[in-house]
Length: 233
Image (cartoon, rainbow, N blue to C red):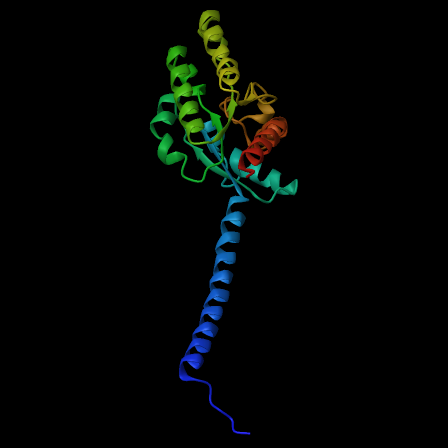
C-alpha cells in the first residue's frame, strides 16, 4: 500500500484551523478574566465622610478621627469590603462643602455621610442659605447615583428660638423630601459632656468619637445596606 501525502491545501487548512482554535481558547480565557475583574472591583463600597471639624478629627491624633474609627469599627464587625474616606475640613460651612464637592467626592463613590452646617449655625448664617447649599449637595450627589446619609445638627440655644426652629427643621425636612438615611444629631450622646469633649467643649475627644460611632452605627448599617441594594445587577 502506497502512503499518499495529504494535499498541501488540506495541510494548510488543518494548520489554520488549529491556530484558530488556539486563538479562540486564548480569547475566551481573556474574556473570562476581564469579565470577572470588574465584578470584583464593584463588590467594594466606598463611602466619603463630607464634613467639617467634627468629622475631620480636629485636634485628635492620626487615625483617631470619626472616619478612621468608623472604618476600624466596621472591620471589627467583619465588614471588610467598605472603605471610609475622610473628606472633612475644619471650619468648613455648607457653602465650603458645596464649593469643593466635585473634587472632595471623587469617582467610584457609593455613599456619602453628609455632615455640614454646624459652622453655619455658629456664624449665625441664614438657615435658608444652609438649606439651599445642603439641598444642592444632595441633589448633585443623587444625580451621580450616590446614596446619602444626612447627619443633622442643632443650633446653639443662644441664637434664639426663631433661628433655632428654622435651622433645626431643615435637616429632617431635607431627609424626608429626598428619602435620605437620616441621623438627627451627629453629636448625640457626646454634646455637653466634658468627659467626651476636648477642652473647648465643642469637639469630641477620642472617647467621644467612639460614642458617636456606637450611636450612629445602625444608620451606617442602613447606608451600607442601601448601597448594596443599589449595586445589585
